[in-house]
Length: 157
Image (tube, rainbow, N blue to C red):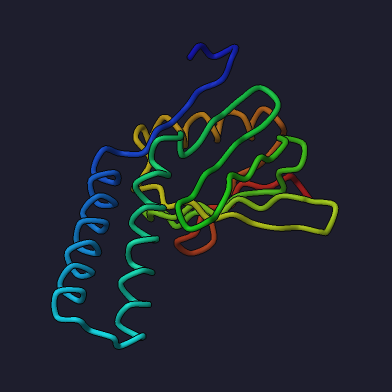
């Protein structure tokens, strides 16, 4: 996509394969339980939960993990059911461990401030995504602050 229309960042390819592997293990476990005529409810609940989680990971990778657009940021972490669409004007700040793999983005909602965490190891083009995010927030007047091993971008006090 062009800069004018926004930029999409997909999941790294291994994430989809991991989801598919989880689904395969769950199906094999279900077949083994069925073959042994296992009626233990807890075991079936575990296998079904594993299957649902694997399907969530696998199917979630078909959409972009992040979209940076002119007026908003869309994040789709795998641990959440849906996407979080955040207007740039609602962003309050970010938090990231220096050299870490987690980004926390704080934003305002009608119900108060919320946050969304994103595992940066899953983002294909992680450096480009972070550079684009930093550039956008710096242009909006956000400043960087380092505290111990954490890096914060926030509006000046």
